[in-house]
Image (tube, rainbow, N blue to C red; front, side, top):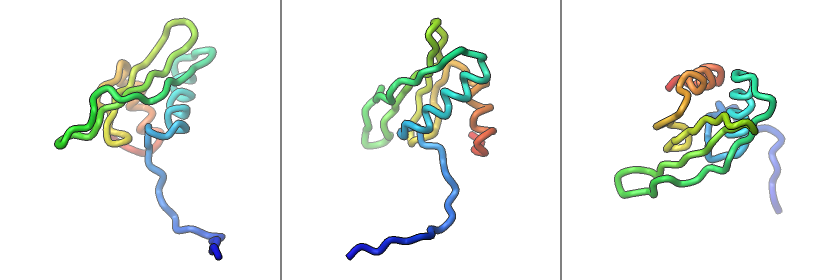
Length: 100
């Protein structure tokens, strides 16, 4: 018999770009800041495979239908290694309460 809880311990939600909703949230933020009519986000794909010393490097892209795009490379779920627009990414992390 399973036991179901009706309450849980409070935990702070941390950014995790492996999860689709965080990539979508970033895309919505970028769309508002750049005044794009629409924005889409790609899947997260591995750029550099995991080695014994480093975790894998992944990337995704936020783009609109008119050629504008922002590329984000990250590791360890939320550590940004490279982005094509650092200013917007910094504003996003500040809004979410996570300083890089």
